[in-house]
Amino acid sequence: MTAPSTRDRDLPDDLIRLLAHRVPQQFVTSALTDDIATISARLGLPRPTMLAGNLIVGDLRTAAVLLSAHLDEASFSVTGVHQDRITLAACHRLPPQLTQSPITILGYREGAITVFGDADLACDEHGLHIAPMRGVLLGDRAVYSRRTTRVGHRFSSAAIDDRAGAVIALSAAARLHHAGVPTAVVLSDGEQNTPDGYFSRTFPHVLHQLHPRARIIFVDGIFHDDLRRGGFQVPPPGALIVPHSGDGTGYSVPPAVFAWLRDDAVPRARAEGIDVQITSARHSRGDDWGMVTNPTSGADRTAIFVSFGGFGDTPADRIIDLRCLQQCVDFITYCAPLLP
Image (tube, rainbow, N blue to C red):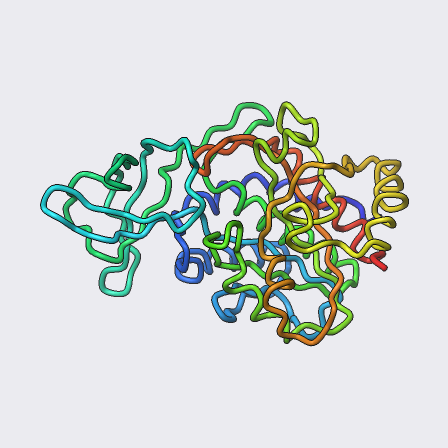
């Protein structure tokens, strides 16, 4: 197993750095390229490049391992600016219990991202709307307003489910790279939309560039009821391994590979002191669904899921145990070079 790197101590700081930005769907390359470049440089990774809405760190053509995470966050679009209200539409699966929420409005002005401020979103018989707000125009975007808090190992914020996966992927890529394993990272920009749980607007465009034998590891969060189904009552401090997404309606790990994870890799990693477990928690569909619905590469690729868990029943309020970041990095680093 590759020894933990002192660079991994920066994982919480990298997460906070990325959470400082509001990044609706299709804003990733404008809002986060510089920060991903700064983190990559510190880790000894190449500067990110852009491909079809994704930020790519590393060489897709030579990578033996591809780590995939997504960077945007649950967002809204302004659909109408009226005298008495501004109407919005959700670009994500709207929590059914949502009646109101603070949101932040932003958009482009003169080629730059402009934040117009916070507003109180209402959801009622008139749909989604806010009070009139100076400067807001049709086509602007909104995200859930963010209050980031840390108490011991517990960390709470909106957008954790996106940004935590990104910092895990970058740190793991650095360790694999320095261990001589060619690795690339794809940070995608494809917020979920209809059909439910579909994140694959940008990720499938990288598939045709991958080496046919490249192995893919999807890094993403499992939250609330999906996590509780696995028997968890608090955010777990370790890494979680699942056999498929969407209870099999998304991507399924090849049976022989999952058996290897379940019966060999996870027990051996646990014996090495890595906090990782097989779980029945439900992993929702994500970028992996692009391999099922939009095959473009002519290769039947092997992929696995390395997940972290948390609670919070809406995208506006997520909480994780920060120790899971390191454990996910450790397990990815341990298993990636051994994947059958």
